[in-house]
Length: 206
Image (cartoon, rainbow, N blue to C red):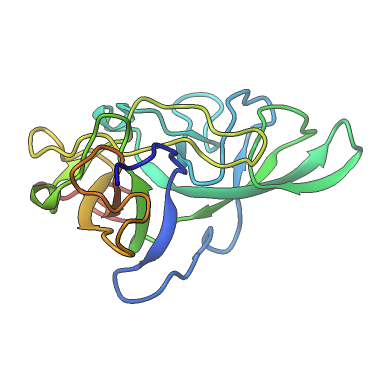
């Protein structure tokens, strides 16, 4: 059965040594500037902002890895902030891009050994020959403001000029048979990826 395109960003599948650990933000949360108007969704790749203000996170954009100063931090899984409109601290599974008084605490899975389930983008099929190759996300789609879930998907893996791509394809999802994402003959199948380029992991060439 042909796969149905419905990207969900990056969902932790496990680690290189075992089951998912959802290891977050070494000791303290990362932060998003309250003035960052770019929405960040559950399952999005995030990186540090380059330039002023420094030290804050923002959403990863396709092609960011081509700039050596832009390296993935991890996968965003929610945030906490003082809501200007509600006049209280709230937790949200995505950052809407406004309504915070002061900095936003961002929760990020930054384990360099984490493995991630992701859907191939529209028109992209991840095959057996893709294993070991590196890939970026496809052009950055918007997530859902209803569910807060990411709309990121994986672009075509490549062995050419890919050392700064954030992900390496390590496996395919083929079970249960007939489930969405398991058809390896049509676009939009599911793959398992590891970090290739991340702040706690050295870049690896193909």
